[in-house]
Image (cartoon, rainbow, N blue to C red; front, side, top):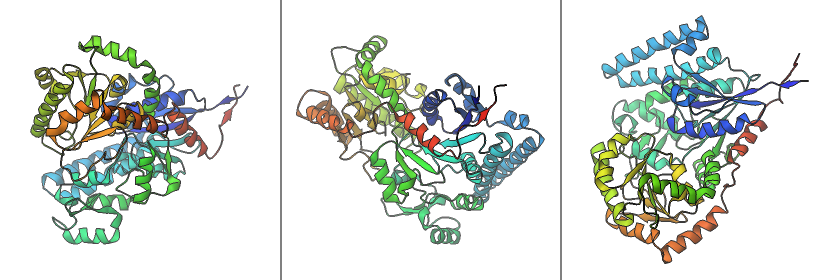
Amino acid sequence: MPLIESRKVYLLCSRRPIVGEFVLLAGEMVSTSDLTPVFVVAEGLKESLIAQIPAGTEVIATGAQSWRNAGRIAFGAYLLFAVLRRLGAALRTLRLELFADFIATWEALARGRVFAKHVLRLDSDNCIAILTADDRDIRFDQGMLRAARDRKIFSMSVAFGKSDPDTDAMRRTNREYAVDSGPWSFLKLRIARDYPANVRATSSGNRVFFLKPAEYLALRAHDVLFPVPWSYGGGTADKVSLIDKDGQVMLRSLGVPASKVMVAGQCSHDILWLLRERRDAIRKTLDIEHDLDPARPLLVLALPVLGEHGMASMEQQIEDTSLLFQAMVKVAGKNVLVSLHPRQKPADYMALANCHGVKLTALPLRDVLPAADLFVAYSSTINWAQLLCIPSVALEYFNLGYALFANQPGVLIASSRDMLADVCATAINPGDTRSACLAALASFSTEMHFDGQVRRRIINEIKSHSQKGPVCVSSV
């Protein structure tokens, strides 16, 4: 009887937040007989990932051991790349930033391409697709995507959040991103002329690059410049899978071709779909674990991550967090549960939480959010609350020059710290405001891809791009 040979889907996990999403997707793939998910991870992520992945999947680390096991040519290349990294570091100590950035970017791209060729031995006979979190990665993952393109292997960017170009522009405060000032002004003006898609104006009117000049030169050398650099899906993948239709509208407005875009939802949504049926059980468990008052509504706070993202100092982050905790306690008393971002360390916030009487949860946000009566955040996870028909308050008082959540159904805006407690109170307590939010959310949830089938849609899209059907081998 013939057996179906499994074909591999490589899941590039250079970013920690995507790991959870890809673990969920891999679990669904395992149930498909002709697909084998293979996680490609940095050495530091391997041990933590092994504990999460479902049976039937594989893990390949990008560290020295994988190169050594692949043979002399591969390991020789690895040693050469190590020398280049040392050279780049030496140039950086001499403050030759342009040359250091070029070598760092060029080396990482080349390392990804060589890893695909000599370590993974990538070809279309054993690989059906390569998936990444963002096809605008400028390092190792982009080299992998280039290798896939060379071998006519389908690639897809699977969005696990939302990207806002204005936010990205505001983060580019380094003078090397400034188009009209700073070092290498002649080169910058030449790049702005030759690659206008790389330029965007901030809310203050300053022109900034998405790619630094050295990064641009390295990507051009590898022939992987992004057609639409300021947008998710604007990079080099063949397809981008988005969370919702708003993302699709934004990508289209920025110039991403319609043929490249699909709206599948987020893998985590499938778990939310299941968890929403367990709201009461989740709430009872949280009440017991955190000594919550079961008679009062629960407020879940996703702590803003501006400090960890370099958009504010950590001193400012702690000060803002203290004021935020104070306002949340004023609204919900001891029924405040705080979810930290993966980049945030509990040790940085534990003393502050104890001081104000709020609770930090170690569980993923998706596992506690279904029990909430109000969600407070400055995060794309507000979309999760919308799907679960939970009113939200968006923290829009950071004066970044733009509003992310204006006119979103079921979302109230706190545009200043002074009004935050009052806005939250009207959203969590019975009344006309809360009723209007719930009505808007009921309509919203019917328009979304919230049906427990997100992973199936992504897998079907991958398989539809396979250049040939399953390979059969003899069982004899």
